[in-house]
Length: 215
Length: 224
Image: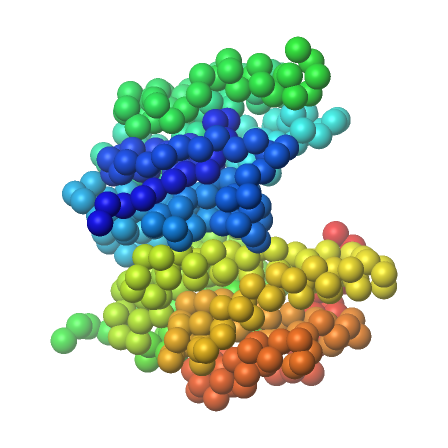
């Protein structure tokens, strides 16, 4: 029986990008459906009744919600020879810790730069600190997992397409503050799964500017 | 025969996050050294081992440090294979992880953090919100002794340490009745099942002292 895989998503969602990348890395065929958050589909509301949010992964009629949970589900369901998580329990715990860190810190802070009035300065300073912490964790490695692209890279890379938004509204330059992280992002962008999943930075920046009524 | 393993847990008696680790270690029959931390006077060891979050629980296993309670539970399950706590099936695992996230994020926020800051009317509204969230767990328990089926699993440890053996003490302190047996028969049955499991029972913080502690935590939240 063929697998039926549907992804309910939004093109600009850095969380949806994680799932798109994981599916592409595993070469899973799926149907992408763009949601309109102002007019959520009945399928979205049925498949994620608790949060009513994207991304939602529907595999043979069963829904998996929350992007990092989806990434693990994809890794476990389609094992193949390219694991997204390391096999050693300690390395796995290390990867999950950083995935959790990214989830707890990055968006919460970054959102305040453009979505909350008057907090741009404070939030952008905080974001730079968070990115520097991640940069320190990356160190001189090719990817967060070492030689292999994996879970932590997938957790973070979607935010790269939003760096233009944070730069513009926070009046900062992430490139000059975190050059090693930018180098890592560019390495990730060399991967087909990432290049196809991430929208162009300019498109995201224009979209947000329009949302805020500035363009 | 393996040489003696070093397993050291830094925790706080009242923390549901460290209690659930103790439960897991006991369930698996893993001997460990326990270091009691004090919230207001964190030890230099804790700060050195967890510089980013400065929180318990911290597990040191043969010199390696593992942090974050849900990450820790999975580490323990993957390292010591007896009495598995995560489901085998990827879909069931994803459901357990999803509901565990709900407990540690939305349920603790509506069910305590926001409540601590709210007035009486606000608290009633948050209690209703909390009930709606816990209803997701209620539905999951139908026809099961535990979330893990016949035995205690990952979600039992996360939800058990948090709701009946922590948040309920907070609600008692605030004079709030959030869960009733009539509205939550499955949950109520599940709590009774949990209390019969030695590894869980041994790790429930003493009630009176805990209610007092939760009142103190509420004050800390309000003055932050």
